[in-house]
Length: 96
Image (tube, rainbow, N blue to C red):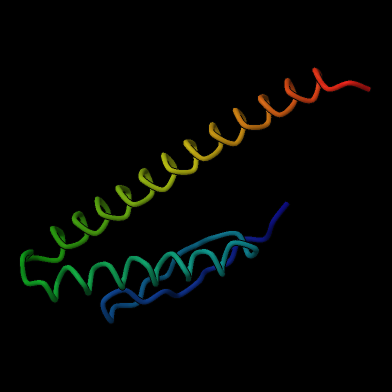
């Protein structure tokens, strides 16, 4: 069973105490850095006013990136699986 710790993260110069499994602390800190970066970019563009809206826009952007990445990975996996299946079938017909 993993030990739960409290990690301090920074988003837009504000500190948050977040509980997480000890072995997940590095990922939590990296995630906070991504959120912080995205929120700063959106704020710098000046198109979103208010911390709540800024957080929602950042979350939507990050989720969109995640979905695009997963779709691309799924397409690559499908293409690779098809190539493997084709190669196996071609190999079966080779003389031994």
